[in-house]
Length: 136
Image 1 (cartoon, rainbow, N blue to C red):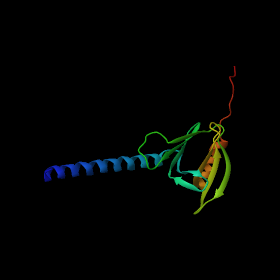
Image 2: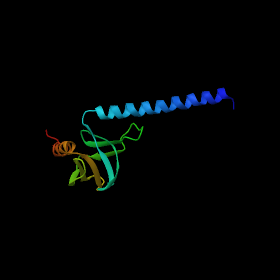
Image 3: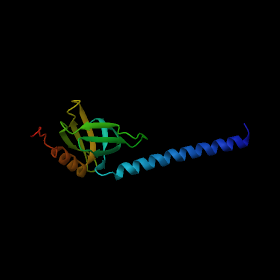
Image 4: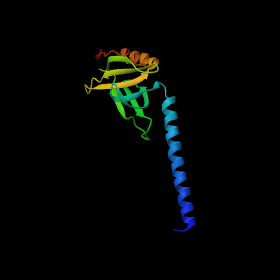
């Protein structure tokens, strides 16, 4: 392989890496600026390991995206109806571990978030719109 081919290949690799980094940075910036979004990590157990990301309140679901991903769709979705806080424990540096139960799948979800984000989460859960049947 000639030195010109190696130099061209190096330039292509650098451009591809910069493009991926720019896409990732744009994605993270966009997720953090959405209305109703907050930093939130998800863990397999209440002790972790934690996967960092950002959550966003929807009208009927809580969405969660991983930071270390380029996916356009959220990694996890939890139905608002039946989403219940089971336990809240203090973690380090003012963070809270919030264990929730997803009503649809009936499994536990462990979320690591700030106290302010927890207040928002409980308000969002409590503000579930009432189900009104057809009224004529």
